[in-house]
Length: 285
View 1: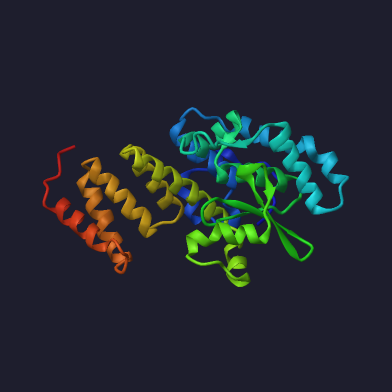
View 2: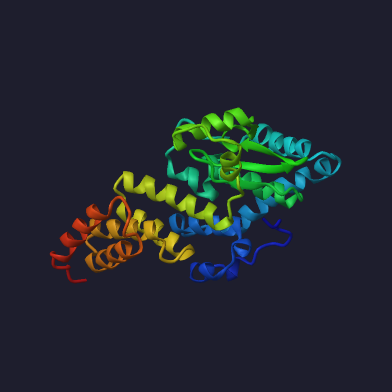
């Protein structure tokens, strides 16, 4: 992943062009704040850009004086998690505010992926190539060191994770203990697009679980702005449209989902919902 060296052009950023950008050109912090602007329409991204930059600037002299990458990272973690008080929201893990970066920066509370995003943005501004990892369960970060990897848990103060703990964390999701090859594959760097999609899918799950179907549809729609015709997002938006009685959109999305994912485990269920939508007269709008 590239390390940001220039301030983003906030005015040029909008949902209509994100799908055309390569992963490396897709700006992580600005797009995360664009996601937040859906929920907070008056959000001004500039103060949050300035805050993240201030975090990095505060550390610049200290980090520059340290030679070893792990020790540089330890200084960053100490400032973010111990001195500034960023922490995982263990008490209200499913609060949607944990996924909106403006709220994370204001409250200094977040979930694994949002805290990883703050950690990555600060580290990269200091020349440290910290990447995200779409690890099963909780999102992690990784830093190449001396031919190996330093893997850390941003939800728990940036704590380094040993190989055996990583195996144990992955085991329930894989059904078996991963060998070295599988574990290394799991620890591959997550592209910016994948990180942002995971943020949106987390939000979709929260909103669908509380039957906030307008917000659930919005999150699925934003995934499609990043990855056009992603089958799961089409399904999710179509099902949300059904709940909102927007039947033309539901029929279109669910039919396209069945075309793109004919072997999916839920095709019979989705086909039934599509038939149900087709047999219902759409309300006039």
